[in-house]
Image (cartoon, rainbow over all chains, first blue to last red; front, side, top):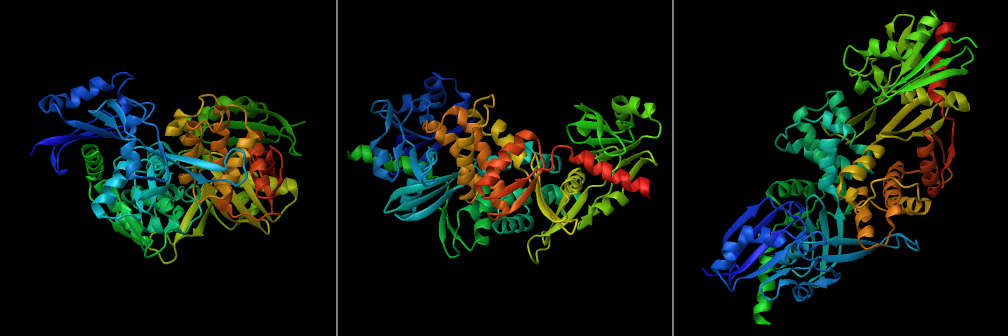
Length: 307
Length: 307
């Protein structure tokens, strides 16, 4: 298999790269703990060369496409956001070329949601994504969908609405980050065991249900402490309880309807939790698999070859 | 004025004491950065003596009553919770005596709210307070009320319902702690100025309104970053915006009705914010003043003298 594309996912805290052939098949891949926060300004070319230089020298006509925070102001080169509604063609047509014809960054997306009608500051609320747009279009291509609701769980979960093949709106939920802050830095950290136990599905789903029927995480979170204080919950269940409260809160905010279908894009561990939680809402999941970033970048590379 | 009571408020992070006369008038007071977390187990008697020993030696028949986390498992001596519904007489009758007849700790309260009907783990959700019960009964006495809804904003805000002079139910909201975590430790900390500017009332009240109309803080919080990214909000407004989002979320969760009245017990800075925020809900505030802990402890001391 001859490599034609170096697909790179360069995020805040990690860097992954894969060699793909003309059909988009994975030849080999690499991962590094070299997220953009670990690279000093001006150091991106050197870091890139260190991680992937041998591949580029070995295949001189290799194209490289990158997605993620590498295109932010703190990254290698800023790739200005495409405004929603935005389709696959929009991001493919607005690559930011780091080396013309050779290395390019896929732009992120911005959207504006209705906020507070008539308010001077908050009439419209902006939102942004970088990297998820490539995963979304990769997933839509893999699943053959042009209309969907998608969730990409993580530090900052994204909920995305696609109509007629275009991302019309999306919302960021700070779910993963709020869980980590409560888990590690709040008073609840004193109650929770230092080491994460395996997911306790019963404690997790009960907490999801509690969150779905409660008005706010601000109110439910303290139960992690009091259930422990009164020994109503086993220490090994507490982290699953808190996780269920936070993910349940995220789902409540989405106002999902039973019978809906959601495309779920995430790591294996998060996918398990979100499948369990979405099942509590009567929502079924479609999973496009783990390689949606590579699928999205391969699809963009094809547009360049046929242009 | 002859001191008859040493009233002490010993919390997690601070220690305050006041000498009161037989009418409950304040003679003098002291404050120390000696919260219970700074005292090692077994070190409470020495810390107490260091701070107030001279007062006790000067007035040998002085009674000392303490409220707050000093009565927790991590405190000087555990004062078991009184279960709600609980009235003033219940806490006055269940003091935990550290030195019989001389130094006592007021018990905190526990309650159980309906949680997830029929669930093995979460059918009832417990909650606890320590110190706030004394403030609540002090405030009710000061204002002459036997029925009220009260809010005690702070790291862990308490919302309290009083009927026929008894606390029937209360709820803890982790408002202040979640604000501090987002302010100092989340991605939003990178956007927010390091120093807190004065409250920007316009940004604060707009954010309260946005939160009142939104399903979850998990969804609204990220706007603190995006409004800054697109320069739609001045850096000096951002902390007020985030504060409004968090406090607005707390109020939304209370399902307040316009025309309601709430008793507001808190520091001057928080009282200003909560008055502004509650006004957005059409809710009026009654303020019992700052010395409600002293009023509550004085009322308990009176029951001991007349017993």
